[in-house]
Image 1: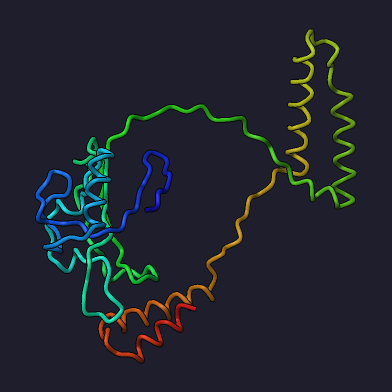
Image 2: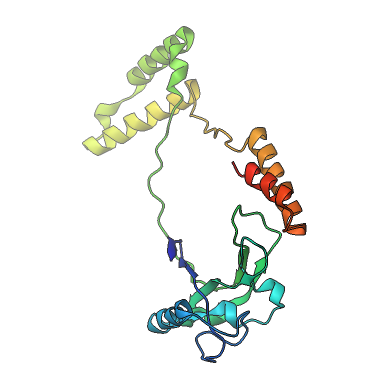
Length: 232
C-alpha cells in the first residue's frame, strides 16, 4: 500500500485480488474474477474498517478494461490494482478503467479514474514576497559606480529626521533603496533548466515503440528482449 499526500485528499494505492461472490456495498459486482484469495478478503476488511469502498468494482466495463496486471508468460490477466475512496465521496468517482496503451514502464497497466468534486474555496493569505535583485550586475565596474552614485544621492535627498517614529523612518529608507536598486540593476529573472532534453525524448520514444511492439505480439522473445534493453 502506498499513500500520497495531496493538496485536498490523500491518495492511496492498494494491490490485492477482490472477490465478486460476496455482493456487498463495499466492492460492487463488476469484477474480472469469480473467486478470491486471502488478499481479497483482507482488502474488504481494510475497506470496511476504514469507511472506504472499492470504486473500481462498481462501474461496468468490458473485461479488457478491468485487467491491471499480466503474467510474464502473457497467458493470464489479473485485476489487482483498485481505486478506493471514502464513502462520503463515493458518488464523486464516475469512471475507473484500465488504459492499456499508456506507457508507465511497468508490468502493470495504468488505471485511470475520473473524479469530480465540488470544494469550498478557501481564501489563504499570501506571505510576504521577498525582492531578489540581480546583484551579479554589480560585478561590472560601470554598473557598480552608478549604483554607488545613486545610493549617495538618494541618501542625501531623504529627510528622515522629519519622520516621527523609527518604523516610519525605516519604511521611507527601505522604499527609497528598493526604488533606485530596481532601476539600476533590476530583479533576478528565474530560469529553470530543462531536465527533459532531446536525449531523454529519444530514449522515451524507443521504449514506447518497443512496448507497443511487445503488446501486439507478447509471445515474441526477440521483442521482449528489445523492450528490456530499452528500459535500461
